[in-house]
Length: 88
Image (cartoon, rainbow, N blue to C red):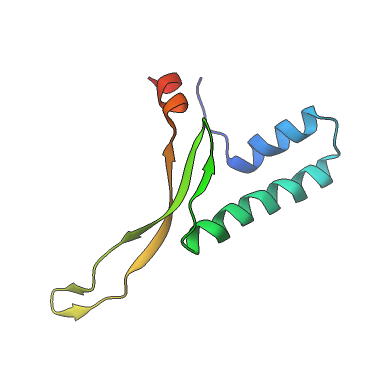
């Protein structure tokens, strides 16, 4: 498999296959992805059994070269066991 597909395209493709309109599919896909981001960045683990987990990952540090830096956070994904096996 070559090329890239973003999450929105993936979800919209699935919803379109279910016979939903493109506009409704986009709205549902956006809401799903927004909810994953919101919950994960609030510190909740968003788990899709057999697929993987979205979670908040801290990066950076508090001190660097004598300057105080704020800790930053980003959204991270850890594939589940079944997904790792299929990717191997």
